[in-house]
Length: 93
Image (cartoon, rainbow, N blue to C red; front, side, top):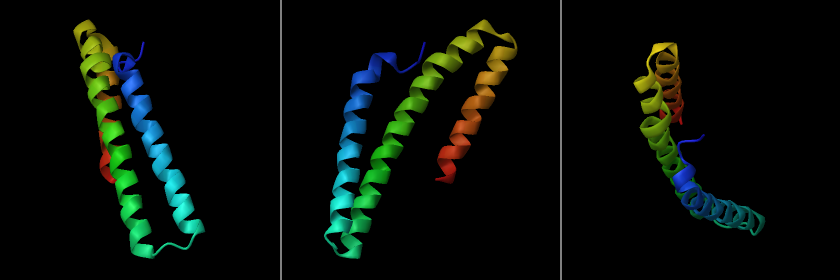
């Protein structure tokens, strides 16, 4: 089971909004919109995706990692390492 199952509808709404932002960016480039205006919208879309990523990470820590730690053993170590790697990937972007 995924940790975000209770927030699935909210995540999908947010992702659809990001999808709309990306379509808007495509239109902006297609119509030769001023560079800075396009960059501003790219920044907004990037922040929206980062927000989704943080929500997913929070759910993963609160459910998947917490459950694995409660169970103990190597599964707990694997889930903590997995979460650490995900955080590192997010920080590089």
